[in-house]
Amino acid sequence: MISIRVRYVAQLKQAAGVAVEEVELSSSSSVRDLLLLLADRHGAPLGNLLLGEDGSPQSTILVFVRDEQIVPSDGSLLKDGDVVTLLSPMAGG
Amino acid sequence: MSTPDQSLTNDDRAIYEWQLSVSGFGEDGQRRLKNASVLVSRVGGVGGTVAYELAAAGVGRLILAHAGNVRPDDLNRQLLMTHDWIGRPRMDLAPRRLRELNPTLEVLAVAENVSEENVERLVCEADLVVSCAPLFSERLLMNREAVRQGKPLVDCAMYELEGQLTTVIPGRTPCLACLYPSEPRAWARRFPVLGTVAGTVASLGAMEAIKVLAGLGEPLLGQLLIFDLRDMTFRKASIRRRPDCIVCSRC
Image (cartoon, rainbow over all chains, first blue to last red; front, top):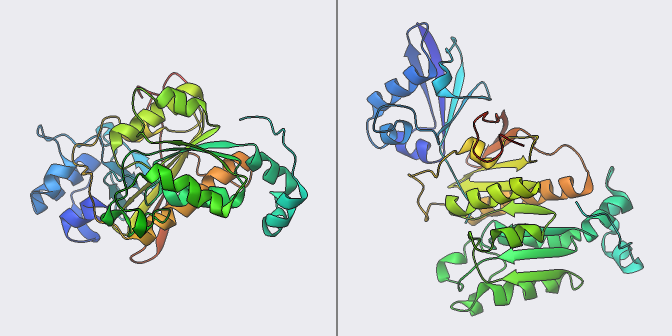
């Protein structure tokens, strides 16, 4: 098992109801696996913000692993102790 | 970027005395600002303060685009607006407020939001764009046109007590469409925010604009500044260009 710290930003934080949470995943889990787990754990509205209707990661959610942007479809694997930041879009006003 | 052609006057030196001694800025940086044109869209909580900071810093010309009248719910964050102007056009007030601070400032005030019809002309007027609009359609449009014309763009955004900022240099850095390849569906026009958050991201955005224009310091190139004023955390994260970006992949 690996332990991941998830940091939510903007609308995602509001939808998750927490700013940070710890998640346990099996070894060889990808970012996509993490998003599926979070969507399942929290349900709507967080799940709808993270995943599209077909279950694929929303292309407008920015994902950072240790402050480096990754694209979930790349299949990047997570490592024990990784900090994953999930950022939903924001704008001016 | 336009070549500096207007030199500093003694009045300029008196007004900008405190910043002329900033390391790496000096008279050359001040001259660059004086000869620069910046497009700011819009002049709300973020854009209004960006415009105010740029006017204070001595940017010579601002192009402002924002339609509509001042509303009561603008006043928690739109510092260029005033209570007595509720119900009247923002663009009738913004230039006056800016010139009260800087009478030599040239302002092109356009009482329209950025659109397909005007974006080419507005970006063409500027050396640099500061994107502060609340709608992604408008932000992505400005990004597309800035990249097409090879103009730097500073992107400022906020939500609740959080904000983010990056600087786009076409061909060198990710553009806004690299981050958001499509218009985010979940984004709502009205969102929670404190005016101080707008002011914070605006001041940081104006700083980025000044740095790019004056050749000062290290702008946020290929980096996204993310901050949360709830616990005062500021972080920089690396962002990536999309090889298939519909806007900048051919730059």
